[in-house]
Length: 292
View (spheres, rainbow, N blue to C red):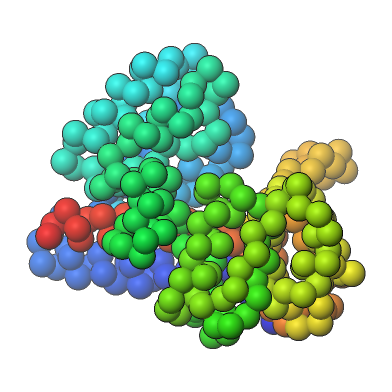
């Protein structure tokens, strides 16, 4: 079993980006500027946004964090989005999800300028990605592809089963794995919670990407020997015996499945760090496009 160490690889990517930022500074060019908007006090979201801000500081990006109260109205948030769209100093920005129930997430994401949509959630970027045109690729699928590519994992002609059909992970990674190019050319089955005989499909798979959000869903008897397993799920499971009151658990029964897998991602330390690294890479790309 080989571990797909997302933390190690993400640090390598950050170092590459930091080198590019240093060269930009030497030339007197504007460095990338990433902004993040967060509404409310969701603990997981605050932690995640905080890690993005720290990553910006490490690699030399400028960063802006806009923290809005839970009571922020949809119209007030739309006004912030329009402000960021119009600000030439901001190269890219994210609106951290989930948003409070009284705000229509889709309406907010649709209002984001596609040229600053470094999360890759806007339909314009999703559509361009599907057509293999220049776009911003959603950071988590982008990170999975980069992880497979940089570890030399063969995907061409392989059968990949993706569990989960969200627009953020499942659907885009199913498209990317099937496209021509590195870490592509796979035959992909997109499965979900309504799929019948799911274990029959996963036992045939050379690659399994699980993005279902159900702790320990994928068991050892659901995969074959030598499978490559990408665990996207991350759930806070309550545990009073721990200082934080919870532990993080992926979709995959890691202890059992790792005995059969040729490659597998841990949780935490797998896909999560790669998501942040690729968000930064998208922001660098946005700065380069705006400069052009």
